[in-house]
Length: 157
Ligand code: 4NP
Image (tube, rainbow, N blue to C red):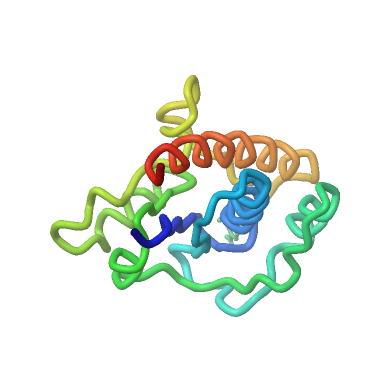
């Protein structure tokens, strides 16, 4: 079986989803789990740009270099490439649901639905906030990444 392929999707692909990508790459690596991981945005404003400087600084504080990441826009073809498409908030979930080809809706879910106790919640957008908001984002996506590694590790057993 090919390894699970996980796509994180937020609005701009410069704050939340690159941090989620970095966290899952890190947690999967630490657990020795073979995963394909990527991120994208529902919007196209930042396509081709590196992550927001505050997101880069947050990842760097946790020992991870995301300066080489580049934003891209999510599209319908992602539903064929990815086994799990995880939306960071409800607007992004609704947008993705409209892109999903018939029969592929099941790959889509809200990220925090995978975290016991945080079901139904959104990862708050730190873009208009301060550095503390990015640390909160990091804490949430790391918690989610650990749950995903547990779940996906069981699926691939
Ligand atoms: P992200 O944050 O969706 O977590 O990457 C945002 C980035 C850019 C904008 C909004 C949110 N923006 O309005 O440009």
